[in-house]
Length: 173
Length: 340
Image (tube, rainbow over all chains, first blue to last red; front, side, top):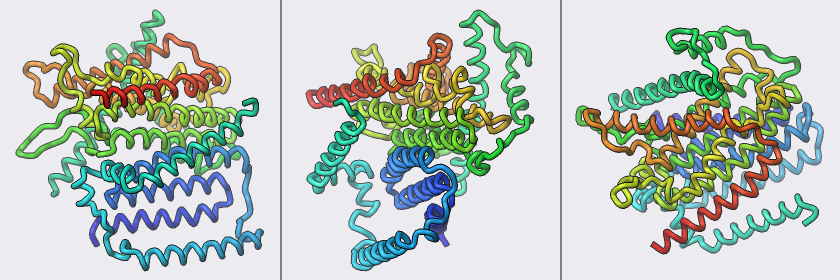
């Protein structure tokens, strides 16, 4: 087996095992740390796909900022060990199974019907991206031409969230 | 193929040795510089001029017994120092030391990896480092350690924002995230005299970067996570022996790394007047180290001069002064870049 596939299998295996451990850990802080492991391995898989920019952003934004806040909240609020979530909350467990099945079928649908995946390559191959001048250039061009409207809508959403957070945090505004 | 692999491994090993040696002697120089500033002599017993002091410190820390506090979370407690140390060392993978040279018909770059996203990569490694501190604070099962860990995460997350924003001006000017290309963009002089380093046009960004870098590395006057007078020693109070050594080393390695980043991004990296009789590659390393030394000395100088900030002062400095200045810098750079 070539090195590339071997590395992919290793990262994918660790990511999946860590993801399962997020659910099975009895300690919420451990769950967050396993989630970090999953994120880092997903970032490594992005590197294997030659999407360095996405990989670094994955680390910087998800692992470096969002998950730190998760850890912060979990450390302060959820003290001590908890029982295994699946065992003592039947209603939630049943709902989770249904939602999980929906998600899996959705993913299967996308994988089976899309032109990407299943060994087929998407339109933006590494060669084409290199021709435009690299990951960042290609992504920036796409965001500000083809996907300008969704991009702007996303930024307005973020602005609304920021204003909302400030309003909630400051009572005497 | 094999030769390429050996070159890569050799580069990694060289950088590793250089960083670890540099870090060890950084502790020696810090003690010497602080001593001089306070009219003392500093370490002078171990070896000539006390030069073997780092070795003695290393042996002492290695041979001390590490202890595990009661009711501590064992696994997290043991992993935490590694989680601080490894990202600090990983940041060095993207830093270019020199222009590179050709030997035996092969182009050899003086860096581990020529990353297209080098600048964000270093920021990302900095943001991962905070996990170790939070984990150590939580796993120690000690209220002072927990408070230190919480303080640190709030501080690092806040100053990460200003650190990133202060570098966007540089990004606009260089048009690249690749650190070698950022250095290349600083070549040449204004009026044939002043070097075109980004520190001049980006003076606002530089100021914000400098303050944020000190807060990001938990150095005085922003060393609140380990404020010994109120928190005993903060997040690493329960660590002894090698666990403590790893926190200590990580702090000095990130200090070196952030100085290296500052020299690369604002002071033109390896660029400098040519020195007769010295090959280009060594000349690059010389100028690069000289520029790093300026920042390192500045760090020591601050520690000897300024008292520690209060926590609320630190936070309001970040969000009420540094953030608006960084944003202003981006807007100004954008306008000037458009006008030219």
